[in-house]
Image 1 (cartoon, rainbow, N blue to C red):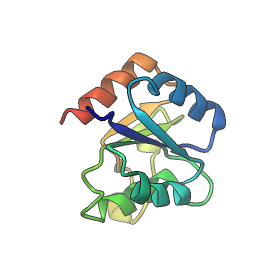
Image 2: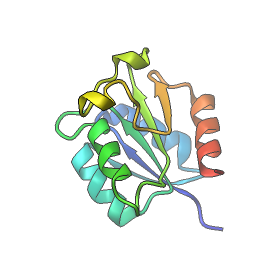
Image 3: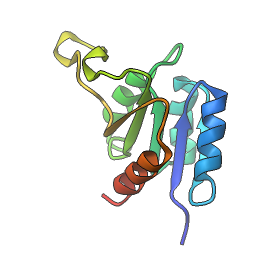
Amino acid sequence: MAKSKILIIEDDPTIVSSLTILLKGEYEIDSAKNGAEGLEKVDSFKPDLIILDLLMPGVDGFEVCKQLKQQDKYKGIPVIALSSFTELYDMRFGDEDTKGSLPSDVYLTKPLDPPTLLREIKEQLNK
């Protein structure tokens, strides 16, 4: 059986490296260092799940989610958002009617707890 594909979109190379080490045995992994590159890789890599940093220079994670959820072929891909924000009300993006809303399926704070991340990945992939 083919391994599920996970795309990591994260600008911190240390986090990318840690996630890759944690996940590479069980999943096929690819990564992108920013939102624009991540959106390009979604089309070529065709991930089953995306782990996405919300705060990146240029195209941030909020915009990546917004663009993915607007396209029928991508809106079903589960997204696990990562951020150092600890309060959901700190989140801001888009128009006034979307401020404070979270565009991802799951939100985890940094530093990451590996067992929690692994549990959320399995849960999202089994939906």
